[in-house]
Image 1 (cartoon, rainbow, N blue to C red):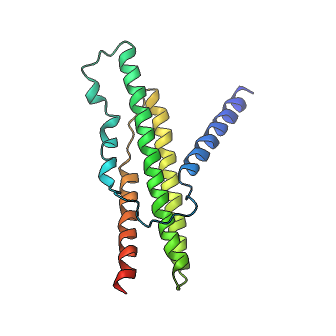
Image 2: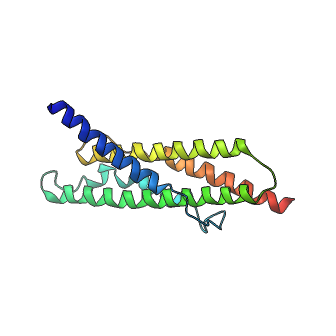
Image 3: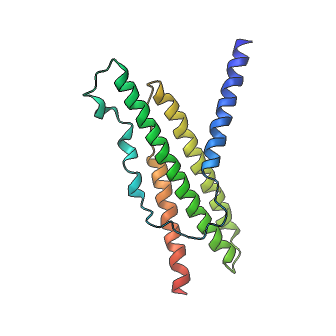
Length: 167
């Protein structure tokens, strides 16, 4: 009976995290801009070091200060993550707007975008799980895959944005 309760609570927590991650990548209605102004993947580079404990070597291992700093850094990391998901959703909305306005039907592109969104959402989900483990002192959080996915999508948007002006 105890195992069943634990499994049920785990599944509820998993569903809650999945809902949160998918809501972050929801494409906003009326995404007019193809490229969010000033979008640069470099703005997410600080995330790569934000959860690194090497910066906390000067803080005593025992006590509340180190725990509080780690907690604050996780909160900042989650804010960066939400911004990344928002930028991703704006890029996706821009691509969808171009697809709708295009006179050419591209089911292959639609499938590729759906797959890309699922992979990005799954990546966010994995990062959230790693953040939960990081909170208890287990493992590290790696977001290089998400940064690369965002950069790839941004590069594809740049190509799509340049294509109409060349025609």
